[in-house]
Length: 150
Image (cartoon, rainbow, N blue to C red):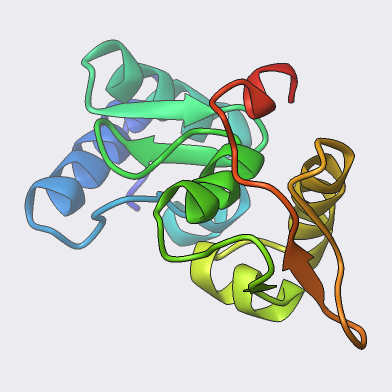
């Protein structure tokens, strides 16, 4: 990115990102701040100011621990709630095999660590447990209160 006035550089970055969102190049998650620093060749503080400007305009929103997203896209609920929705969907029943960690990682696009945390919470709530072999099975279906403390 050409370096004009240092005061306006963040505006150039924010307008570039706004254009990428408008043109569909960025549809949900924005690149990490480190990737934006490299892409635009500016400082982290310039990127932070550009993101703050887009947030102030309601174009993007931040999700603690997950990054920046185009406003109104994606499911921002905790992973345990989204995984518990599998049990609410009616496709799984008591005694059925519960998806593996690998299957959940692929389905939700999250790390194995995040999946293990969600599984531990669901096991603690008595929703899933060890099944035959090394897998897990559905022990109970959610009644609606299970993820409120997660």
